[in-house]
Image 1 (cartoon, rainbow, N blue to C red):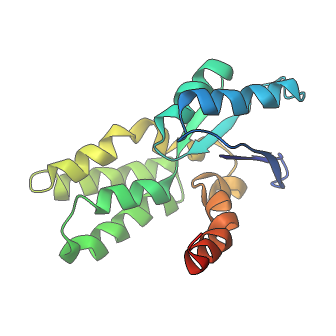
Image 2 (cartoon, rainbow, N blue to C red; image 1 turned 90 degrees about the horizontal axis):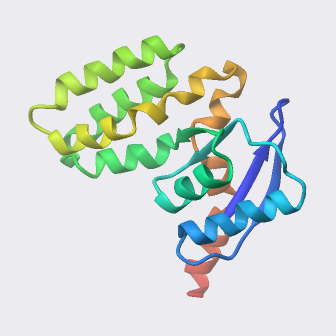
Image 3 (tube, rainbow, N blue to C red; image 1 turned 60 degrees about the vertical axis):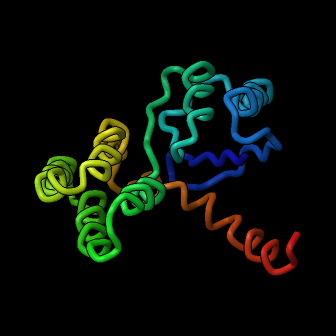
Length: 172
């Protein structure tokens, strides 16, 4: 489990790498408590994560004031998984328009278009999107200069892509 912080200037800092059990609530709580022990005594303004419930549950206990942002990359994959491949390109375009919109108001218009277009025939995909609506558009409440970095967990994913690549190649 990895925690990366971002300063108000946009600089990324590695805060913790924690060896936990299956991203459980207990493992995440231990990682967050360790941050507190090391001096992080104010709640982060925003936390970005995938759908791992253990992270969000631990965060709510350890830093209840922290605002949540669901990772758009993970959510996109989850939505597309519930749609037939033949419409992936069009659906993905709409999803990208949502989180690349110039304002939250515009993003929510695209969201409504997506729901209107797909809700009758692809209910599960729309339920997947709707489930996290409140935490998908949070990044719009922060300065636009940071949006690119705070709408996904890509900063963590890309850091470890080399490790995953080597692990797959060496089978260990």
